[in-house]
Image 1 (cartoon, rainbow, N blue to C red):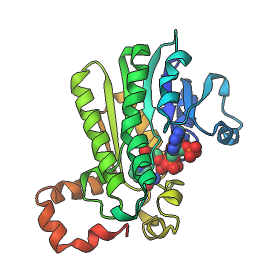
Image 2 (cartoon, rainbow, N blue to C red):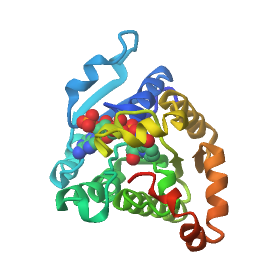
Image 3 (cartoon, rainbow, N blue to C red):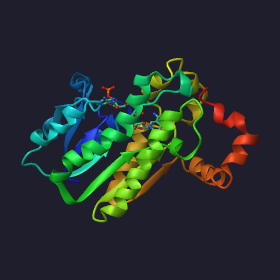
Image 4 (cartoon, rainbow, N blue to C red):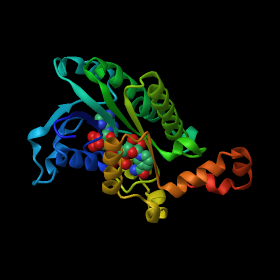
Length: 252
Ligand SMILES: NC(=O)c1ccc[n+]([C@@H]2O[C@H](COP(=O)([O-])OP(=O)(O)OC[C@H]3O[C@@H](n4cnc5c(N)ncnc54)[C@H](OP(=O)(O)O)[C@@H]3O)[C@@H](O)[C@H]2O)c1
């Protein structure tokens, strides 16, 4: 990774922040796309920030993303790590129109826009890392738009892997992580408190992701036991939803 240039989103918080720390430790050059650059001030003092470039970009804004073609003119990019994401844990009819649009725009649509915009600058064997979610693989009552957006994101990454065989596409299907994500998803924090014991450590997951980038993994499914359970669920999802409905209401 030494000397490689990666574009990272979501670097101001949670998993993205942990990934940024590790990339800089690995002596990669990192350009972060952030909407609140001031949030990065708290980055650990001991980190060498000479290889960090901060570009202000609101990933909800199509025009700001399209403008990046000027920012990266003449540069070469070895990979994109898309960690920005959001969701709302509430019923379908409780989402406002803007919450629904925000979810799909950030989680899937503008990832595609960013990919298209940066395509001319990507090296032929670049890495595309998408932070997805285990919620892509099971029915998400009370988080339907989040689950649907992550399922769509997953499909895009899987297709990209086939369409661009020279790319290394790594999908990270993660269960709950102990990050500020939950403060926005469910301000009551009832889900976060109830499942505190299951939450993954963002630093540990970030290390798995960096290792996966180095070793050429195509998927990281964490935690593994959740991935295995979801495989069984896939054998007969409607039947399981009918008889174990309570399991699908954990975000209510
Ligand atoms: N935490 C979980 O339990 C969990 C579970 C499964 C999957 N995931 C996925 O993991 C990824 C990382 O999430 P996290 O837990 O680290 O969440 P987080 O702590 O809330 O971080 C989300 C990041 O996305 C950025 N972001 C949001 N909207 C943006 C916008 N319009 N423009 C630019 N950046 C924007 C945020 O920037 P600001 O600092 O400016 O808000 C923040 O840096 C997400 O894709 C999430 O869906 C999380």
